[in-house]
Image 1 (spheres, rainbow, N blue to C red):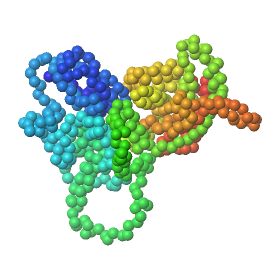
Image 2: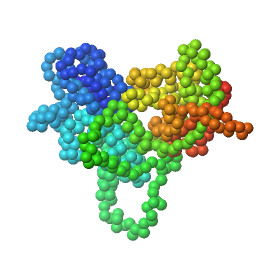
Image 3: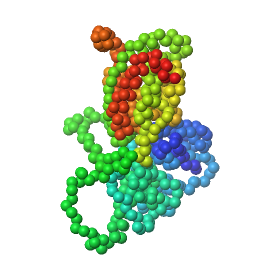
Image 4: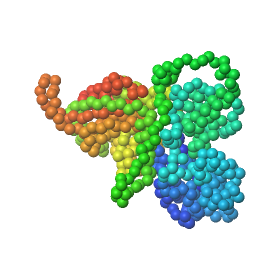
Amino acid sequence: MKELLLPELAESVVEGEILKWLVQEGDTIALEQPLCEVMTDKVTVELPSPFAGTLHKRLANEGDVVAVHAVIALIDDGAGGAATPSATQAIQDSAENPATADMTLPVQAREEREQMGSDEGGSIVEATHIAKADDDSASLFKTFANDEEVKVRGLGQKPAQSAAPTYRNEGRVLAVPAARQAARELGIDLATVRGSGPNGRIRVADVLAAAQGAEGQRQKAEGVSAQAEAPAPAAQPSAISHQPSAPAGKLAAPSAHLPAPVQYRTPKGFEDRETRVPLRGMRRVISQQMQASHLYTVRTLTVDEVNMTKLVEFRQRVKDEAKAADVKLSYLPFIFKAIAVALKKYPSLNTSFDESTQEIVQKSYYNMGMAVATDAGLTVPVLKDVDRKSIFDLAREVVDLAARANAGKLQADELAGSSFSVTNIGSIGALFSFPIINVPDAAIMGIHSIVKRPIVDEDDNITVAHMMYLSLSFDHRLIDGAEAARFCKEVIRLLENPDRLMLEGF
């Protein structure tokens, strides 16, 4: 009997959702035969079988969120004999048959069960890290729960660690970036923290609990005599005027608890007129990405408009050449090119903020995320090195990426690495929008419908022009409003003068 583990499907991916099983229990399977579809926050893939044999048991259901390296199925390879149950499988079996739990659990599994059961009220099944649709125990986004700090900036001085910890992890320490940041600021050795996340991954709440324990040990060590030597406390000034500020060169981050989510209740008398659908698949990934954008950026909007008349005429003139080169020429390649040129002049818009190190990441490459609306939901493939490609090359790549996004055929590396993003709301007729920043990018530009409107030209004559709104959402922690406005003006200058764009864009 062989265990099928969820592999590492891409760099930094720690979990995946089982979208669909392609084989049933008892089916004969061949080597490399696709067994199931798995979705991560980067890509959807078919998981091939590393063994030939028979699918003995599926341990993860469709809709389950599974941690990397968790067992999702058992395969009978025909070698004979029963496989020794892993700690993960034994824990799950013990949950299904608690009467025999202690007899079937290996030592490691029993210890894990004891650690997770009594103190935190967790069930034994949680130790498998296979989460149900309404369970976030296997999701890194549990950092957003209302019992954890979003950030730890300003929590106070680093507590002295006077007592030796009772727990120490001698292997590789797994921790979310926010937890590493918290540990650095609070002086906590991550190797001494017991993680509550998938595969023992350390979350922010784990670090805060360790910090509170260390502070309690310090106060106990100081004893009552230290209090006797202290002078009488003076009247306390306003707490607001003495809030700790971020160190020089670092951006301040919130430290307040998130409010509890609003509890939905069905209106009385309408119970039979509602249908509930689990949040899963692409919609779950989109939800998590949008929540991260909302919590970890300071979103601001600037709006402008561009006269596209000359570019409309230019595109019309080169249509025959594009057709001869088998190129479907839209306005997007010109817009991508103009943005890349403008980013070189205003580099703060081509940055990211590393939350774990509190550093601004400045980029000398220009990769455009292109929002594509598919039947499954919104996805953002990335055009790499836009500044180094011709308009025709970009046009081909736009069509190719959009087609494969709709077919669900994008690779993981084609969905990562953007430095700036663009959403083309105008392609479906929208006149105006407030785009959501595609974290970790610092900004996103929304482009809208090109419509004929009357304008007043430089000679005070009323004329008809092809006009389009631009809406730029940006992270105000990284970008000043004046620079964002100047960036938009630079994009407008290039789009309104296609000849300049052709000269400066290469």
